[in-house]
Length: 596
Image (tube, rainbow, N blue to C red):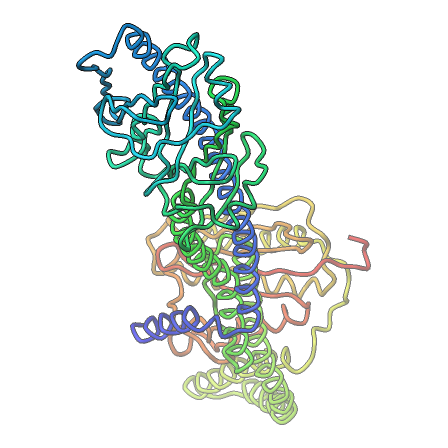
């Protein structure tokens, strides 16, 4: 038993390991993986593109909003500077003070004064520095001069390194024709909000250029307009966004044009805020890594689930195939254990039932072959010794009619008794040599039970055995020999009574039941005796096999019963348990001629 369990375990393990060698398994596995990964990859690509576009769109929106806010901030700074310059000019009307105090500012962008240098430029071109020093001040054009003489404030720029210097100018007294120009160089940190101190978030860069595409200030390494950038920005649409490349790095940018020509005679500055494309898409990079991990995890989950599903389907098939090969090799009692919880489990039960019936059929064929051989032998025995036996019995009877002493008569009577017993055995042999001689007719099984009960009723009473008979309803008629069927019942009931001899008096029980099952007529004969040991159950229908003491049985009773049942195209089986007794079950097909 131990080796059998080990071998079975090894076979199952081998099936579980090697089932993917099957082409069907590989095809199913590939189909599982393909159907799972193709939609997953398509979804990942779509999601990646969608997320990338969404992040870029959000970055563009954020840049546009920041760009607009930055423009208003610069414009607000220009207005503050204009107010301060107007106040200084008002003070200069009364005379040049010894010291001019500039308005300081302090913010998160830096601290200091709004104006870096302050000077008076006279009509003759001479310069008087008031705060700091201004060298080579920009000269206003005729149009800019007219703008100043109209009492307005002028904003000018001059190329310098690293960025343009921005100046704000205003006439000290616009009502006097020869009044000097108050010229102030604007602190770029205050005006732009970027510089050595810095103010913009580290991920955002800013470039501001004038209508001539000259870069006024830039936090990027752009000192003059890049050709491609210039082309993109030649006529930029307001609040538009673009992409450009600086030093090998691509940027996503948004621009906003600051219109200040009416107030400061500047055609307009274009403010460009840019953010590294890599920085914008850094969440996508994290998403890509996460998604790749999810793809790999999904692949393994799909692979494991597909392997489990394929194994659940193919392992039972492989088990059934191996079992079928063993049956083909002659192991008709092969059984399979399939606990898949689906149709394969049902198929396994059907396979086991088929195997059981094949095994029963094989035993029946062997038994039939034995009975056929024994029948041929019986025919020879009956033919060879039947006539001499009759002659011997006649001679003994003649001798018994003659006068003789008591010892001789007793000896002849013994011979006569043994010859009669031998004659009875020959009669039983005849059952194997030819079919019963009774008339084949439709027989009511319940009537046979009643007749058998009346025949044996006195024996049950004499032996103190309880007899229970249950007749089922709706039994189909059986075509056969009534006397033969009765002989089967009588022999089975007598065997049951013999099995109860050694039991306690008055406790013996014999039950005879008839019932219908699947269109067949069934009879069961059971007793509560000691049962039949398992090791001899397969031999009980063999001729001359008996468990009774010598001289009490020939071993032909059950063999004859089996032969009669077989001649009626029926089956007989044994259910025996030492704890509950013995039970024989006989099944006969319905008589088709009767229309049942």
